[in-house]
Length: 354
Image (cartoon, rainbow, N blue to C red):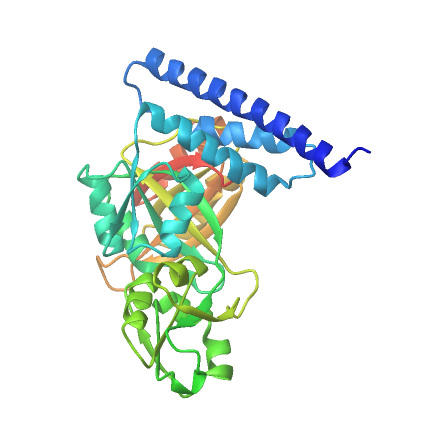
C-alpha cells in the first residue's frame, strides 16, 4: 500500500535537487558577469530592484510576494558575495531596527559595521570604511529623524535606495515580574511610538532614552529592575524574556530608511528623487518652488521643513518626487527650480522600495 506522505516528500526532495542545481547555475552566471564587468561596482541597485519586481509580477503563488522578495534578496546577496563582499554601516549595536533594515535590503551575505551613532554611519561612507550606510529618516507616526535630515544637508554621499520597515516593538527584560520593573530603556523614537501603551501598562515606570534600542537591551540585560523596547531579534541576542509584543500605539508603524553610498543609482523604471531646497525671502517664494513640479506633471510625495541653522526663521525644505532625475519631466522641473531657489541640493535618485 502506497504512503502518500512519503510520495510527496520524495517529490519535494526531487524539487530541492533541481532548485539546488539552478541556484548554483545562477551563481555561476552572476560570477561570470562580475568577471566581464572588470572591476565595475558589484552592487547595482536599479538592476536588483528590477529583478525583484519582475519576480513579484511573475509569482503565481501560493508563496506571497513578500516571501518571494525575501528569498531572492538572499539569493542575490549570496551571489553578489562571490564577486565582492559589501560593508554596510548602520546604527548599532547588533539587534537594532537599523540592522534589520540593512539585512532586509542587502541580504545577510554582507560585512555589517555597527556604528555608535547616525553621525558615525554617515562618516563610515564618507571616509570609505563602508561602501554603504543604512540610516533612518522618518517614521509613519513620529515623523522625521532630525539628525539624519541635518546630516543630509552636508554629506557628499548619495541616496541609492530606500527601505520601508514595519516596526514591531516588544517589551523585554531579565525579570518576568512586571511589578519589579523600575525603568524602561528605549530610543526616543521608540518610546514615543509606545507612549500610549506604556501609559496604560507601566504608568509609573521611568523611561530612559538611549542611543539605540539595542543599547537599551544591553543595559536591561545587566539591570535587575530594567526592561527595554526593541525587536524580537534583540531579545534573542541579549537573552531577554519577551514580556509583550506589538506594543506600538499604531499598528501600521513603519520606519523609512535611506541607503547611502558614494554613487547614485541609474533609472530602474520606478524611482524617487530626493532633494533639499530653500526659498528666497520674498512674497510667493513657496509657489515658485512648487510650481515647476506641477507644470511638468511631477508628483511630490514628501515635503518636510527644517530650520536652516543659517539665520533666524530660515528654513530648508526636504522634497521627494516620483521619477528619476534623468527622466525628462523631472530634469525639466529641476532645471527651473535651480533658477528660482536660493539653495538646491539633489540628494539622489533611487529605486522606490520593493
